[in-house]
Length: 481
Ligand code: MLT
Ligand code: ZN
Image (cartoon, rainbow, N blue to C red; front, side):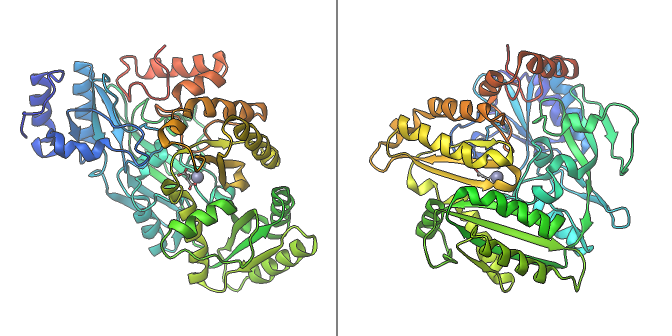
């Protein structure tokens, strides 16, 4: 460890006690080495700290937290650093260190009979999926960042993704947790039980708490039988409204085999074809809206293909679908999903993009998009709405690309103003201003604007009860006053 960059705000005694507890190798203090931990995917903010710690065990996390509590130093837990609301970096003036969970990455156990797996917070989501698959099981959480995001972060933010319609959010996929509390105690709640009705469900309090109540160090995950047959289709629609009866028809004809029902706008497909690598347009004509849907079953020799074909036939007959392709093999289905992933990635080269991650009741999605499009066009003529995402969950990434002839910074300067107009519309539909990305720092004040004083006060009481010193992820989720 070199002390050339240590901020004077971190007391010498704290640093030497920390070095004794976790060793110099687990302390990053050189600003050049710290820099990558401060840069976020969306690049809107850059964090500031003089220390990143990388503990290897829950015991080390406990030692770190105890020392931070003693010296009143904030701790920002950080996983794979793929979050989208600036929840994983300290801001200037936070006087906080970063606790990165990358080295806390053991798979502790798998119990295929119980359909559970115990993993540490730093395990990469894709590693968990692959390990489960090797045991003929499925861990269904799936999202664009799965190759680098960590399960601790997924749990702390209650991540969503593309399979929520069938398996639920992360909240539904966790049976137990191990957590280091803000006083440094280790709560071992690693229970692998389907039924446990013994009082407050504490794990649910930590899930989605964004590191503000404690540090998740390990979890018991719920596994499922591995799908044996899968059908994927991309469908072109004339009107967005047709997506609703199409979804209902899928639910009645495919039942709970339906695993994904994603909305893609034409503008997104155009961006992906223009900027993406290896992306192809699966349908010859041009339509305003597309649905990418998937169904799967965990039994072999099922009649899924027959059911899916008859579903598509009915949808065409009723004129809800104008054109469509049912993937003939895994490679074709992968190419549909590549198109979907590029919808997320390929907005960047098109200039400034003002983002929203909202949900409304599924039945209100078309009306929400229409109302919001009209409102933002009025505010900024030429703005290019790019709504996409998890239509089956009522969760739309209502992103807005800048007008072609506008200066990028002038456009981005209107971020908050546009957010407020869109969020007011979401609110009028009884929706949520953060469906799956969380609150972090970016949406903290906006969240307070929409939540009732009673709800805000209940959240603040929980925070002050569990973390009276306010050292856990300071400044995130809960407004300071
Ligand atoms: C997605 O569903 O692709 C992401 O949650 C969206 C995003 O990165 O905005
Ligand atoms: Zn999403």
